[in-house]
Image 1 (tube, helix red, strand yellow):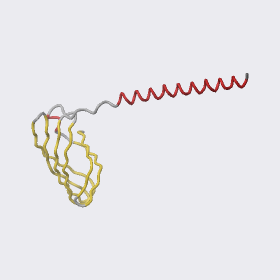
Image 2: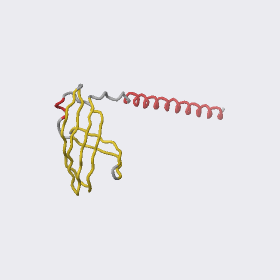
Image 3: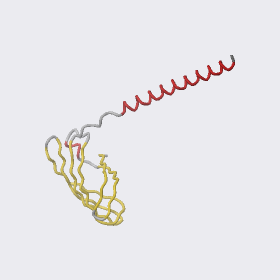
Image 4: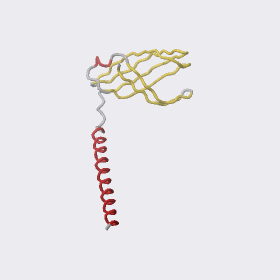
Length: 131
């Protein structure tokens, strides 16, 4: 009787653990599925050409074209930075998100980049976010 009771308690404990694990994993999965909404639809697209010159500090000038609501809008850009030595060019194209009015495109942007460059060759990604 004692052995049977002990086995019974072990089976109940194992079953309870399995049910708890199932509930926990279901809860976590539901949260992950709820957060994995489809990506937002782009508002437009942009092409950028920029030249950057650096010697301790850096400066950049360039321009591009915004494509928004079926029209083309040329723009100029420039900026200052820190670090580096040399001259580089940037040719980029990408999608624009959350642009409701053309006037919202103007302003100051922060930037993050990842990638590589060797000589005249390079590849990477850049994200611009209006500040």
